[in-house]
Image: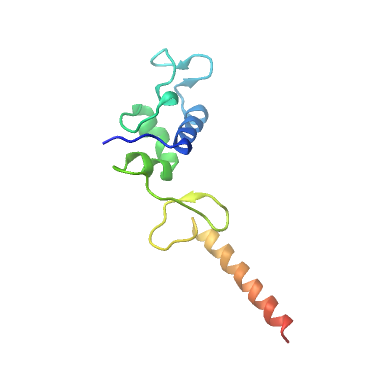
Amino acid sequence: MSRELTREERAAIRRLVTTLCANYDREYGCLPLDCECYMLGKCWTGAYCRYFREAILPTDPALEAALTREGPAPETRSCAVCGRPFLPEGNQAYCSAACSEAARRKRQRDYMRKRRAGR
């Protein structure tokens, strides 16, 4: 069953098509179809351009999961360190191991600063 795309999903699709699609030209639109790009006017989930689905969509895993999953859009979280959206696995708070390590270092610095001030 298809659902309406959210504003963020439409903006992400537009950004991906205009920056990464090899078949898109600003002046002519979709080069193989010789018309305006089908993906730029997309409002509902369902059928997608094959090139977009196979070559471009995998570059944005959060958007890919939101568009290919049945039912409502999955909940994404913002990384507590860098702010990027990601699909959490369980109680995950950070998008990557690097962000997790940066948060751990910051907590450790704050702890030591507080401990030294108490002496």
